[in-house]
Length: 412
Ligand SMILES: Cc1ncc(COP(=O)(O)O)c(C=O)c1O
Image 1: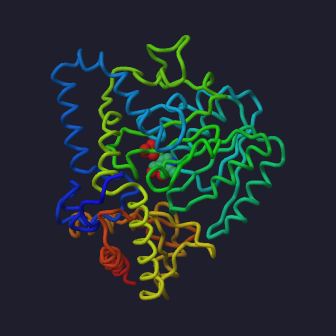
Image 2: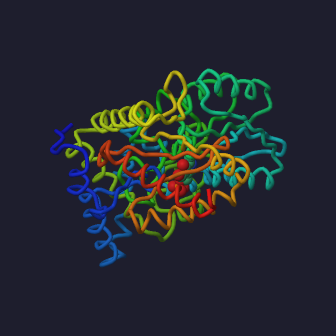
Image 3: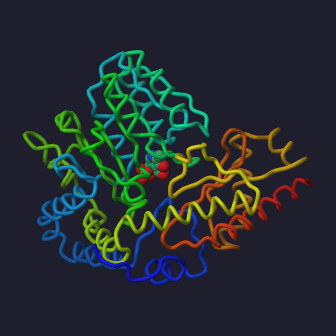
């Protein structure tokens, strides 16, 4: 592991990331961010592809396999259990749409699942005449409460596959994923983990976890460009899972071989995994160094929001919910709170969102990820190596100023 060559924070952002100088990025969780050296490598490889596509395509599978072997070390499994896929949604689709469900099988999911994945589940449930059961979760819950809710469903004996988030997205909440995976094993249920937010942020050891399926985005917390995610399939299920589309490599091929070249596409995002790992090691001093900075930043930010600003954060007593992402409840009072509660609905949220983003995006060069949870307005902040504590207070104030203008426009 190399030495961190530069101090993390805003200057680090200017030195190593591509954001405009006037932008204050506090929402890494949505699209990630690409460091300059990774982007340079990306451009170089894309040019190599576009200047002689025939040569590039011929040499592609071994280069993809090389990057697969590198990432396999990070998640501690054989590269033969892994495949690059364009994004987490594709990985989830590959699993759910090729798994050999039979009529009447039940899928277990939660009420806080990511919309796109819920749609995929709804599709297979309808298409293959399956059943869907939902674990109803209300946060902040302790890990023990979450596990009890899962066990209540898993122990009934009718569930074929349990689909759950490792860290769900809106709001950002970490699940006790190791224990849920163990519960799945205990009750002989197949585990499918949506770890879209996980690699980079949390240490992932797939040999230890022994999940059946796990999907993670490398473009979120591992500094790869979008179009880069990883699908893990337990060897027991290699023969069942096909890429979408099924392509040249099919009969007689190993699971991972089928995914090395799926069809004509741009594979450059897979080839810069090496460069992203080099950035992590040589420029950042390794993943542990990154985690220590981002977790420290989160702790300081939560302390600032709760102690200094008197706000509430979505966290349980054991403090196991927050990761590099944390959620702050917006403090609405009096007539504004009454109005909010009376009108709360998806349409009302869109009205607030459009009003606020008109002010924030062009006026302040920032974007605040926010939503409604449990009938309360919350902001989800992300912590990254290019952020500093002052940015959370500043952007929160910009956000509440914009909100203030929204309520004033309603004469409140
Ligand atoms: C929990 C979760 N699952 C799946 C996804 C989908 O990721 P992608 O758009 O890369 O497919 C996201 C994206 O934010 C997510 O938060």
